Image 1 (spheres, rainbow over the protein chains, first blue to last red):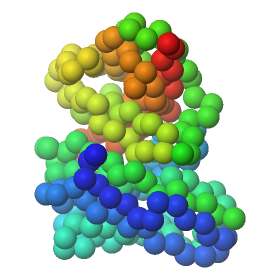
Image 2: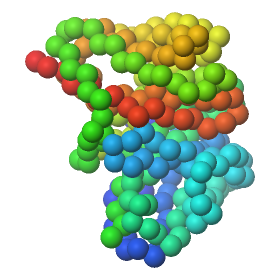
Image 3: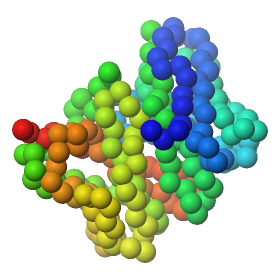
Length: 113
Length: 111
């Protein structure tokens, strides 16, 4: 167990809807990264948050957005859901650069119908 | 639980044998590498890491080898056990950037 928790575990939405996924980082970790993992593939980096600011973004459209709170927990928001957004969404927490091994949560399985 | 990696390369080994999982990484500027294990229905679990100023690092039953000349990373698992069955990913990081994951290898341990 890494101490990183995510909610909900599973979620079913329809195309065009909006979704919010949540992550609580491991104690003492102030950096949170979000990844999308499609079936049969490795995780793909969405973005990272450090001290409540976005600190790097992968090749995802603006309808993927996030927040980090003062307690270092984080949210991933996806607007205008598309069928291809169906995936496992993973949150990883880490200490800042220099001690930056990332520890993953169990993920949220999002299905878009 | 959900399936991870339905069409991944698969390595099948006999219980008790040693396993070697290989990974080719893409960026010669990558400075930090991690091997993760992912079981069905779970998030990736950290196994071992290595920085680019090293070529070998050992953990408990696992060894990671880094060959920067050919941009190759390998994970060796000694005395493979049924609990080692999972999908294994290598991840590389270019300093200050995000981690890039490989496609994964499914390890299947035969009784």
